[in-house]
Figure 1: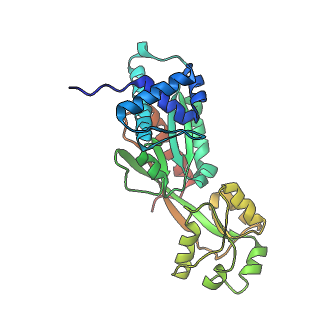
Figure 2: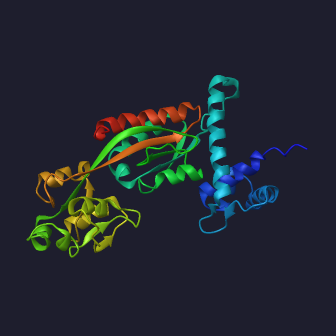
Figure 3: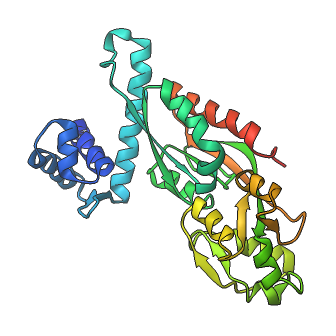
Length: 303
């Protein structure tokens, strides 16, 4: 007995709920009632024998739901390629393909956005940009939450292609006032264990990496938690703490003397890679081309 074919109306309902965050907004997107969306997903869950949506605020996909959403995204990419080959099947001019992408916050705040904005202005896509630490964006690829990612991981995720982007240079900086107050006797394990540092999130280990390389041992750092690239800069300028900032972002502040390096000529260079689902898609190829071109001018060459 053959297994039943996937119900693409139900899959579209699932993808809409996950993208919109609620059954009501998904229903408006699909031009049906919320009860119809709920019924489609319930029947799909019964057929597959597992939950696909965590009914929360906002709604989110389970692991199985994420895999199905990735399948929907890939099918839409394939349909777009088919429309290009067979114009008679072309969708309405306003039809756009969702492209979920993961990127680290510092790339998003510096070089990434201009590239993808120019691409999205010309291509029939709707970008869904998700932010995570560069050490963890590959997990979103693996789970199926995104189709492409800027990641620190060189080893390709299963089913993905990978290309080196270059290296993002970070500098450990603070204001001259902060350095005079906390590091008058020099920058070492003892002074770093006392001076407040800045940290983006619990996933952020840039400060730890820099200190480990400088001191050749682990140092427990007092830290402020600030999950925003701009807040990082503002906090440094406000004498809250020292931290690792993208050189491209703070170059004018260094030139003006408002920020200074804790230890001159001690950058931390973080290799970045571009990974994307191994799907034959002109849209994925176009996005990849834009990202690679931007990285070639904004980042240091891969070492």
